[in-house]
Length: 158
Length: 386
Ligand SMILES: [Zn+2]
Image (cartoon, rainbow over all chains, first blue to last red; front, side, top):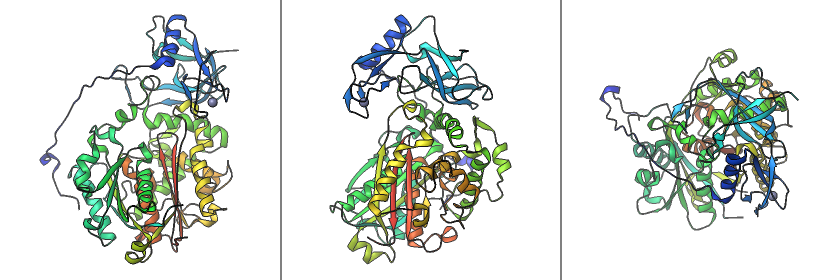
């Protein structure tokens, strides 16, 4: 069923777009990002029903369909529960430029939190990463109020 | 329980990395006309059309509008399902619901994707703007994260993973529609292909394909009249898990949504020993490690024994339960169609129209879909209506 055509004969219509969006964070995420920006503290919320501490701090617990109100400080130390080393070029969506490879990425369970968050690991060599590795969040000096205020997680000795 | 419904016809395009000879509407038309021909119907026979597509990849809003006419939706009841990787299976489940409701008798579902037109990694990255975009690394990055935990938890090896890739690409050689057909692929070659994200090699991941697939569902009366061996839908279940990757801890090890969907579907049909009772399975395997994890989540074996199934050849074409005779998603992946293809391939096996990839005497087929990192669909198709 395939039409026989030479590549150079094909008509293609190229489109390049620059689009603009803005996303209101909502009260919970706003508090999380403001707290991290102003005090460097990482906060989670506890579900009143299942008592799980959620990070990101969602206004509604998905499992219980209950509003979350109780704020709890978590981290900045945590444990790597999954890791990888990214070896293919991928656009950093905050800069529009490819992130230098390879780099480490992990799921980090912050101390005191039920859920883990995915973030960048300072260590990019998979031979040096392991599950159960203890890490600590390294924050930016000049914070802007987004998740990029955590630069990465670095390995720590305890 | 709804009214009985069956799949009576399927149609697919030939899937490949780039179908630049057609636009998306023509691609959809190819699959729709193939399915109508298979069911010996014309578009006049169709009451309703369901389209399935992962919208953002082609950067075009309202794909149901631009492609609807190609699927014969003009002046018919028509709408679109878009749930990431599960779009195709959820679209099929929607088609089934239409007929099972008793409100429609003949429904066509068309899943489609034209990866070559756009930017799939970009589309994947348009996720939650607060948490995910700073660190997004497409499907591969997400998977690789889970693979490390799965390997540590269950002791699955790189060799076992590579064997899944070899099985898939060899099975694909029997499927004239498949994208990656590699008859001579070896475990060594898979493990020597470049690492995309540790420990996942390029040849362990699904490709990006252009392609479309259509399925025709019919009510009991019409199915019995028009199809010598209808593929009856005996169960169709969908489950969605939490939204953030980090909350679906031990994702491949637990795969809660797939486990729960399978449990519910097995209960409806009365399946106790899936490995023995199913004659064939077409499961949505986005990468090799996932296929092994799904063996466990689907109850083909105990947790921790998935690697042994591939070592023992149990899921090969001549094994106890052939998994993905079509070559699976690892061989062919036009995302919006990938789930629809699973359903079509399961139905094809019951119709007995599988050609070189036909498994002998198929009466019960298991089909799954997988979306984002934690959504699952399970369908059970049977040669018997009850
Ligand atoms: Zn809760």
